Image (cartoon, rainbow, N blue to C red; front, side):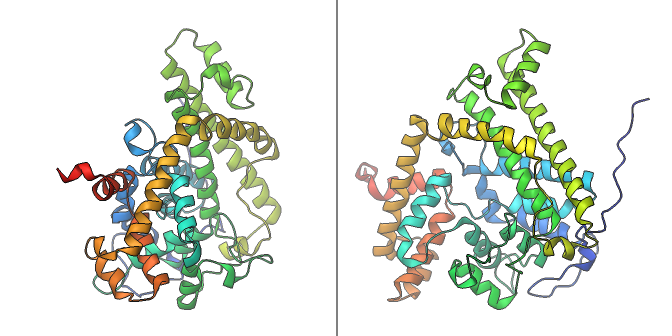
Length: 398
């Protein structure tokens, strides 16, 4: 009889929804869901989450239906994070929540859109997708009658904004952070000078695992490089070679899918092993002790960390710097810049209620710029393209 998977016991340092620090606006508990499950459901039902279906990292949404969007990427991250959390005895629901929410502050057109928004906002406080995520989750979603935002638990908000580590460090004080962090810290401290809990740390590495592998698959599918180009790349080339030797003559799509599946397994196994090794050495007895450590528990082993560096370098050069991608990103940056300039100078061209919000700022250009930035950041790729055409293409008048 085949072995059946038996989940390990809950770790003593796992986040516990029954001991949550609560929500900024108190609410009665649910009779059917834990607090972290409610947070997950609120993310899934949020307008900003649905818009991720037409936001991309590398390929603009209209380039093809098979490339990852930020929505499908977030679903893949949540699957990886839940698996790792289950193997480590952590709270799967919180890991899933953080995975689903981790990209919710990204603007259209991926990194190009963020670069362009940060540039046009340089005189008005800049743009940071992590700070924008906090704005979305605490201000911009308007779904509830008594508060703005989603009123997530402290643990979910902390995990979203600190998944990559402390925001306040010896080199970076609170007053150097984007205004969204400073403003929220005055309402509720999220402990910006400590690491996040273990579930957030796992979600951050699940993000790395997902984009490493979907970049391989999407890059091959787009014809930016071939399988033969990967043969000399450590880790990826080793796995592709084994798959092709084991299944000679099968279709290319099957080779790619099988290799990517195995690569994801290698990364998850390594993450779980390294996390377990570090936890055994540090011996944290609570989630607070995890936050108080001077290092992350979630990490890849030195071997995998070194072997993935050439892969990331290869993908950067052959994918992110490919002339086709560069052309798309150049167009994307131009769209963002031109939309921002028009809306800032002519707020009456904004649709309601954004127009009302912009005009209510009066002569305060910093506040007006932030309203315009929020509007553009919330756009999907396709909506931004269409909005630009509506406003700048005179042929549309006919």
